[in-house]
Image 1 (cartoon, rainbow, N blue to C red):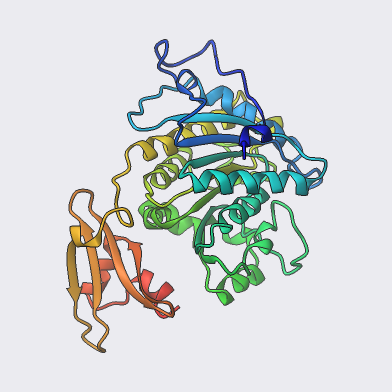
Image 2 (image 1 turned 30 degrees about the horizontal axis):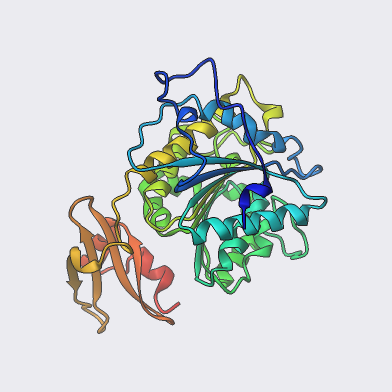
Length: 370
């Protein structure tokens, strides 16, 4: 299929305030064909849910993205434009599914600029058509779940995903306890999904690196960022991750050799102050691109036999812990017995340290025999 038929082109690539020398900005280095990264906008909003105005975000963010310097040696990026809105919301979602499926089959990584975060659902369903298990990582200040499973908006979109057969891992990071109910935590726990709360994440941001490394989809809600850094959201919070931390997480995601889609959602230009949030969103995307350009080609592209292997005897039972380390970048992996057999998970050096101290590593607590 010709996916260009799904789009209205975005033409305003120039900006009088370019930070780069002539010809060296991102906007000056976009390609129409033979690209390996695609940027798409989805002008979708849901009035009545605090998101009216978020449809303006894709073009507003582009104004701040394309003047940024482009230093890539390995990437060819195309801006396919904004998806043409259908007569109904379902039409738009179906178009997004088709596009994600097509691009992923071609090995093209997609950056989706929303719009509202419930666009994560058609993104997942587009990848789901390929038939493989999927790992979803969500940065959010809330847990977007409701016991009313028929409810569907940017605050309840996970309702449509938590029972999906191919959703193997769901990790929510940055959630704030006072914005999450006991029932939401219970729904996650009973399905074997996990969250890393804001305090834990900010205390050690590198906890998120293995999660980013293993994700197929990273869905970032701009509401997870502290209000002073990102005021242009429907439901701002005085607490949250910092601007530079959001950029670092995007960089981690870009480094992933598994990721297929990076989505940025719930930015609302109506509430912006001097373009602060749009500029931050652009810089988050820039950091994701920078990560992509500097990927290591690690596992699963590389073979584990290329890495250092550590076998730690189990002093209590007969379940030895096996870890792998890439000497070049100090990244770690571990083999964990699951109900599906032995599987390899990205992990941290802290997991290895816990194992040699005869403690159960956190990653094992999550996935052993799951």
